[in-house]
Length: 109
Picture 1: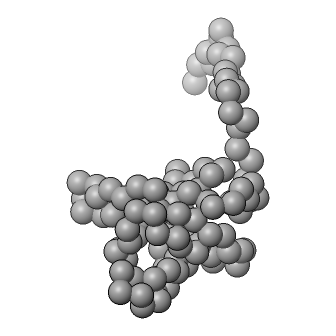
Picture 2: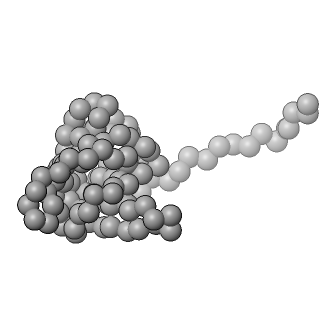
């Protein structure tokens, strides 16, 4: 999970342009889940602007779900690979998680 301030832009069902502030809920190398109040439809193309870096990427709405608390989460998949949009490293697919060694001695307080 990573909360990144975004500006999400697109067109409404009747063709009017919109641009709203939103927060990412989680991010991946391929896109993000965004908490979004603006109504969108599956397959819609949106622009995401990272408000910190001012970088812009285009993405397609691939899923829309409403959580129990009433918030709407929209899954957006980048239309072109941009491995540096989030400015973080992601694990290579298929890698196993690192395991920490547990010390056999526990210090007493």
